[in-house]
Amino acid sequence: LMAVPALGLTVLGFLDQNLTTIIVNRPASGLKKPVGYHLDLLVCAVGIYPICAFLGLPFPHNSTAPSLIHTMSLTSYETVQVPGGGTRQVVSKVVEQRWTNFTIHALIGASLALSSVVNNVPKAVTFGIFLVMGFSSLSGNQLFERVWLWTIWDRSLYPRFRFVTRVPYASLHKYTVIQFFCFVVLYVLTSVSAVAVVFPFFMASLVFVRKGLSRVFTEAELAELDAHEDLPPDDEDETGKTQDKTPRNLDDVEKLPAGNLDLSRAISY
Image (cartoon, rainbow, N blue to C red):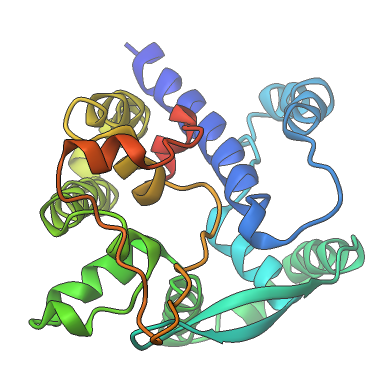
């Protein structure tokens, strides 16, 4: 029976490690140095996991929120206006080095000697830190940008993001509802301890959910709604108006570039 939760923990560790690496190293992050997806897991499997298994220690892996916040803290952004209203943050420079990571984890290790002092820190302060980290990571998140559109009743006032100008409104909101529903399910699974063991299996099942979306949406729509890169908005025409490339019929859809879809990105949502 213990094999079931053990399998879930293995899946969770694998997904957490690789999802964090994929999100941090996505093109929108502006990193220049090459990634090491498999090298990270190889180092853990050969040098770290056997020691943890022998000593009965939990397996370490990347932590998504701190990794994102750390990358953002080393990044310089430029604010670019979006046609139709709103702004977007574009990466201009990233200070890629190892010293901050080393210093952070050295201080974490040193905090073991200060456990009596750390215990006096109010929980409200700890929760506030995580709250700030969570809200800071929402910047540039396409899901919440699309959810925010639900508060704008006049569609002509929508910021002219590519997923607004190139995707029909019905498909745009339908995709957002499905994505937001999966997000709510993940949140409930992490909040209710009685069903928390299902969390890693639901995470893995999102791969098949994403695969099934190709039966509901066209490839051109998914290329905009599930883009791995931070796609810039469409240019304005000579009159100063944003070119609306939303397909109105099947012929228009066939004219749009399908793009390269990566099904493995589904689990990041």
